[in-house]
Image (cartoon, rainbow, N blue to C red; front, side, top):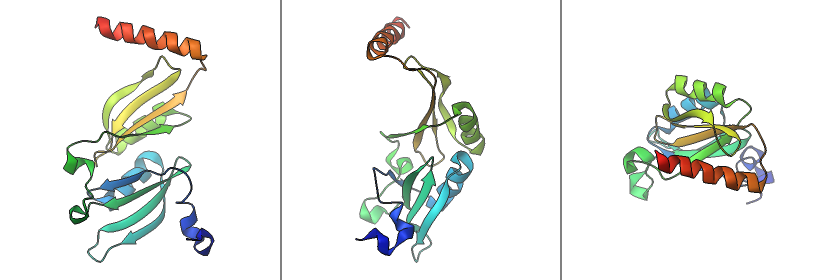
Length: 160
């Protein structure tokens, strides 16, 4: 497809784009706008009122989503009883965005804290079962420093 024929859709095409399946995709769009400042680019509703497809702009990238469609094998994390995937956001102020997401209805999985790799980092789960990590980079480490810090963190964890 030549995306120049439909410029509204071209922003959803380049790069690696998460495509989330949600029970309640329209409500998920509202949540992502409130929690992360996402903006809706396109919404394609099905005749039954569910969303066949939507595309959001979130943190400078595209995120696609659709409602669950069990007859096509499309199930969200709540139906699957969890997710093995975490979507990561690098942001200027992790504490502010983390609080904004929690105030919008996200559940804290890992509170924001300073991490050995140089980021201030935390994890939330949205009301639809998707996990989001977010971080603000605080300090640059050399490869050697990072390896040493990882070993120290592992040792400290094993002592608990």
